[in-house]
Image 1 (cartoon, helix red, strand yellow):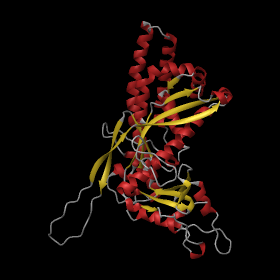
Image 2 (cartoon, one colour):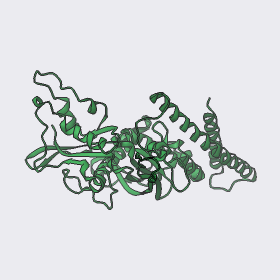
Image 3 (tube, rainbow, N blue to C red):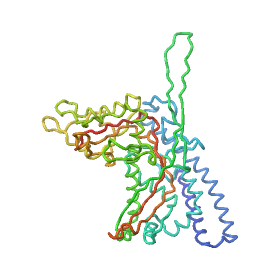
Length: 444
């Protein structure tokens, strides 16, 4: 077993014993024996957690270096960036303490150093909740019965973030998730690359240094509503994770919409997400800071060039190269199912499926019906948007102080209950030209 696994196992044992002492004491003060043991456990846990954080950081770095070498034959290629904080999002650092900022793509949120410190700091106050309910589903069932509200324990909130990553296209595409232990978190960012030039013998070398600034993430409140029958909430006790999955799906969809369209009030159907209160998403940031990367938006929308012309994928290629021409490397496409359907059904003049150009097929493709589609643009009634970009350059900051509020009266006449999950977070684009958007392209 790897060293970090042994440490994680021991940390779990320590947390379990602390919870047992807290539960045994109940509302009474700890006995002297309990207090002595409590102090011993806390001391050991703090020391072990520091060692674990260091070992985990080293392990993550080593794994990524090994993977990079395996992929590129022993050295890293394909990037013009010289600062490792922005060349590899996994080693972006928080300005406050130098910690790794991003949750790794294969890493659980609960294993991130920042999250672990938050869990440790709140362990005592949350132990009673965890001990009483056991899991999030049980907590939700309890508060739907009482009509109360609850702050979700950090350990469960971290699990919900992991589940939401499976439901939000921007997170599936590789957006960098950054846990926030404060309302505002700063992340270092490269804003200008160094340049090189040939010179004559004996002539002066013109200095050229990379330039940096900070990406500031400031938590905004986003709420997602899950409505279900009273029977559904009651019966979910036999299907562990049902409630959690429903909440995570609603959160994921809400994160998708705001991360893509936050700040947009017109031009994409009925979307109206003024900023404030919404954070600024990809499209608004691109319009403001890299407007040449926003294509389309023609008065009557854009219809794909006829198949027979051999340029049916022209608009998608223009998107890909808008990013590439800015010396960025697009990693994926996010589009609505109705637009995806248009390209899936395309055939050549002989009726054979149309071959996708290599520059498009090389990108991962993700479907999100939070992307505007089926709206009217002039005479086009099936308009749809499509996003292309290096999704690792989208930063998704997430607070773990998730709250649940139960609405028992609003849906009572239908025998239903509503649960509002309020997530706090922010979005930021690390490199403005890493994204391109085609607006009002013809969908199915």
